[in-house]
Length: 95
Image (cartoon, rainbow, N blue to C red; front, side):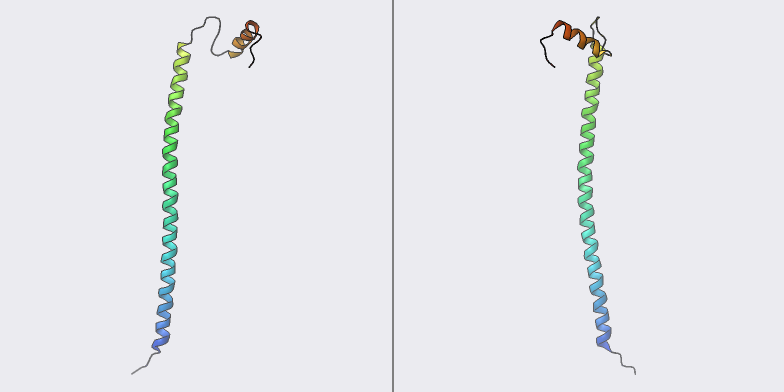
């Protein structure tokens, strides 16, 4: 019959349990941090989609405005021409 030092073996097992518990706690902290990051990412993604919709609407409004632009003396592509004429006709106006 062999006798083992049960105390030493028990201490080894308790130390291993302590290490595993610490690792589990560390993993839980990492999981919590990851969940927070993913929540923030979701919010940013939703904001991005919302801003993209606003941008698309603005682009449509600009396109519609340019299609409806009818002013024989001026072209929407030559804003400088309009500004020169505006300064000549209304010299008291300030920018």
